[in-house]
Image (cartoon, one colour):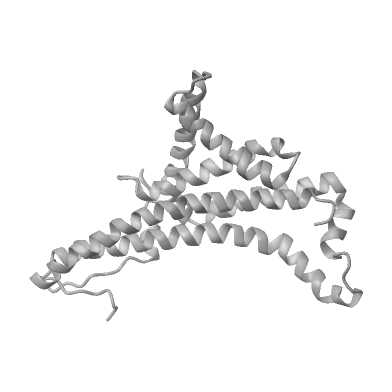
Length: 262
């Protein structure tokens, strides 16, 4: 019998949330492209676009609260992520990094927004696609600056290393740049969003089930709800942090590709 299986007054057990709760049916008919995660991704694009259009529509020297919020987010990505990590060439990468950060952040925060309550990045296909874009960008940047021959040579043959060590290091470096980086970049985001949402489901649904149980279980249910509420605030912090980490690592990969030796 599972640990989270509690008996209610009608004798029915609590079935804890699982991966099946993330496989949502289509919202409209049988079309697989109208599932909730896909619609949330489209909604995030609309929400981000509308927000920054409204924030910049009546830009003034003395900014409104909306303009200040928009400029703060843009300034954070431009200065603290792009400029501090990429260097003097940072401005041409700001549009991509800014789009990436706001897109990931919005889709993460959807996980705690009432009525929506689902982080689109808990479906691994979305982080995979974002990681592929980053993979293409930083390799393209490196090849364009250094040429494909020198770029691959610097990856496979690290300077200052004994030649015998290349037998081990060269395959590891190739795997790191072409397999490990995109995989870890995407899986880190996916795993955090998946695990966080699963924990919220456990405590909120578990508290609801306890509330329907015998008197002893009813007394425990407020603690489950309270823990779920506390986890919601913690999850908000994780959602913001993961958007930052994903964008920061992208900036660091670009900076490495621009370096003379990477």
